[in-house]
Length: 174
Image 1 (cartoon, rainbow, N blue to C red):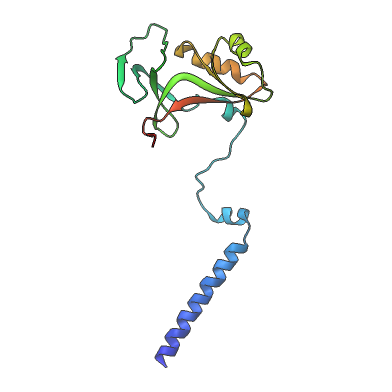
Image 2: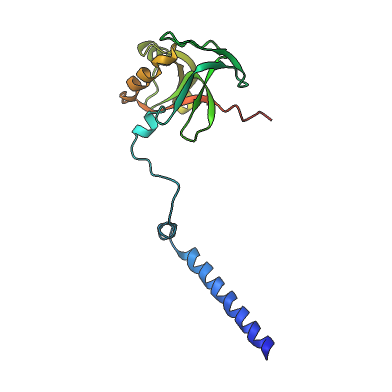
């Protein structure tokens, strides 16, 4: 008799769990999202978020590094910071990870322009052409002018997004 009651309780609990699982499966994504109290993803407020890659980024302009994150030199800024090929500065993004940055950034276009002309008109160095995906890679000659150049590109209607071209020194090729 005692065994039958315990078995009945287990069967009842199991049936209740199965019913709850099916009910949760039938709920829409919106209903399930309401049940989650704290969502870690925040909605994109505007297209401006795609055009301002410097938002929440801090720059360490005191030292130069190589691609393997070894310090090359301590910098003494004279209103100019020009990086040679293979030289990087450290930046920290909104996720607080240290990344390496050489002054280059990716620009996604609505209508793909002549990239050489675009670079010349905006006083940038043309680095690479990713025409299959409407992206051009450009580099500022002087890192201290980066904010001015990004601001100028943000008002261009043909520019859909801008992203800094960074290297994560913690990721190693396999």
